[in-house]
Length: 466
Image (cartoon, rainbow, N blue to C red):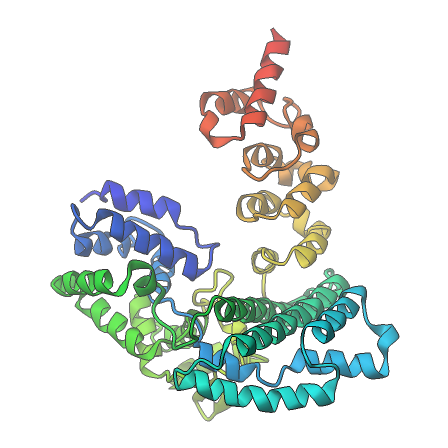
């Protein structure tokens, strides 16, 4: 049996390095595009068959299909105290000279655009906002002015959180791997939380009502098309178990990052079952919208190395956790799917780099570590997975990052990267010292893979050699 050409094309588009929300949107777009001429059940069977892709890719596809965000209401409740703004205003009152330039700007922005001037007025605002939140939950609109004020406070809270993570990233000891292991989950959660708050502010400014979450796949496909897709999937006997799982997730709507964390525990419990769908099903069975409680039994000793500092609590052999208090990043792998409980429990250099791909400040400092740039293929991997022009330029102009046997593929990767890296910084790589003649000829043979100006530079190189 061969994989369908369309399914094969989708697998090439999907990347485990991207978040499951992005994967879900690509999968939704795929099924909408083929719905008129290809049966979705057969395609889904092939996508979930490890014979046609890696086991990790199958797991990523499952989490992408089951992806959902955090409820707007739950998010609003979690940030109602405005912890970062409260600390920032407190420091501004007692130690104003210790604020960074960014923090000073943020305080000025807050006081200029809202009635909040200090901790006392922030507490008053918290009380008032509580009534607005109640109105939203009752599907009542508190009004345009209040929306704008609330959006402003949310944006400032998000920026205050980003300012804090920027400071931590700037001052992190990237040579101390033990401290980095403790730091990364905090930074990952803060970055994700800050983005969620900004998205909520955008929603309020666009006059949209906050509400409960929905499967990203359903949102992308539109409910009617999704319902039709589910009906067709339900007719396939091989997908009966999958249908049960997606129905359970549609009812519970557990955010993907939490579901993956609990599925890691379930994976250890079901150690003789290699099917990721089984792990997810067991995880869903023991989740509520607020948290989870699962008996790990004999698997507890193997899991303890991941449970330390994760926020989960252990009572006998039962592991419990609250989704409103912790992110459980320690329980997810570098790709934000499940962790293999048989691993050492220590983050490898590669895992650490993977978790920093969205944090330019920390990644820029991490790649200065010889353990990183002397790790074969790691800098090349960063180039293929990072969309940051800042990081790519740093690699292009820093000799240690693009030379040596460990970085042999870096120059070619930079030439192929679609990001708008200044030609003056990568022109040097159009040279046999960095990229072989055969590889340079391939760039001319397949010009669709490179930028037009890079193609012209390679073309000029060969013209000069004649």
